[in-house]
Structure formats: structure tokens, C-alpha cells
Length: 141
Image (cartoon, rainbow, N blue to C red):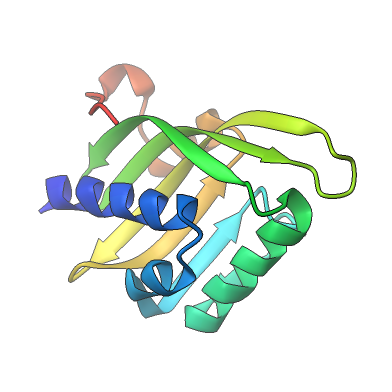
């Protein structure tokens, strides 16, 4: 089951990168909870499908329309999937191009994402999951 979660996590990144909000929302449970260290207001909790849309608008406001995530590795962690990634974008106000290493944790139920959290520090994601990178088997992007 959790191997399927990694595939679903991949699909989430694909929908995100294509800026296909409808496909992104379709992957999410109506009760999803989203937290992102990269949104306009870090630490904001977005809830439900409307929250996913607001999160995407906030990201576009902060980073522009060219924001994308490049996966470096995935990890199967039971009911969670973990992705190590690099967020690429351009600060909408500063114009500065960025490549920020980070991580994303997802939790899935019946093929839909019920929890998504983006971290600016991979160690925090590992700590929250209670795992060590040394004990994980990476899955290629």
C-alpha cells in the first residue's frame, strides 16, 4: 500500500509542476490539511479543497508562475511518503531566482492526500516522522 503512496506523491508533484490546480485538487481528500514553509505566510494551515486553491495562489503570489519542484528522492514510510526535493522559483517582488532544498511529507487514504506538509529543512521532516535518513531506502525520482 505505501509503495502506492510514493506513486501518488509523484503525481502530486506532477500536478503541482504543471500548475494544473484541478488535477492537484482531485488528488486531495476534501478534508486535506496543507502546511507549507514556502507559502506567502509560512506556517499557514490550509484546509480542504478551497485551502489547496488558496495555497496555490499564495505560492504564485510569493514565487510567480514558474515555481516548480524537482524531486531528488522519495521514501516509503508506511502510511507516509517523503520526498526530498528542490523548489525552483523566482521571488515575485525581488526577482531573485532560488533553488531551495526541502522535503514534503504526504499521508494518503484511499488514493487521496489527507495531509501535505512542505519543509524548508529536511531534518525537520525526518524528525517529525521519527526516522533517520540513514535507515531509509531511497526510491529514485
